Length: 160
Ligand SMILES: [Zn+2]
Image (cartoon, rainbow, N blue to C red; front, side, top):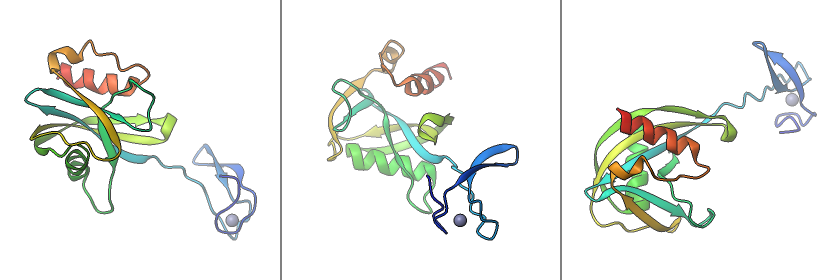
């Protein structure tokens, strides 16, 4: 963000609560770009055959990860990951349980991670073009490549 979205003046770094934030220099305007993180839900979706990893069409070949998505207005994180799992994989979910919260500053997101059990036949939506089901006992050795946060939250779940 370069210009004030309210009055179009160039923003400047100014201290607020001891943090330098992009701010409007016009005191009558007072706009501050707080840059608060966006919540993103992530699900370890476990079917009777194993945990589902999916490949998004927009990702590099060979990169598979957990189901994820954004919240709709007024939706709880639990409802959001259940909805995303049904939308993206066509599965019925049950026994949703919170794993934890994981800041992801590189993307300015707060990851809210869940474990879900799911049944049914996997039908990928238009965002995805491939999936794998990995038995949970093999997930400890699975190579997630650059997805270090995925690795971390799966390790937290396996250790629980
Ligand atoms: Zn302004």
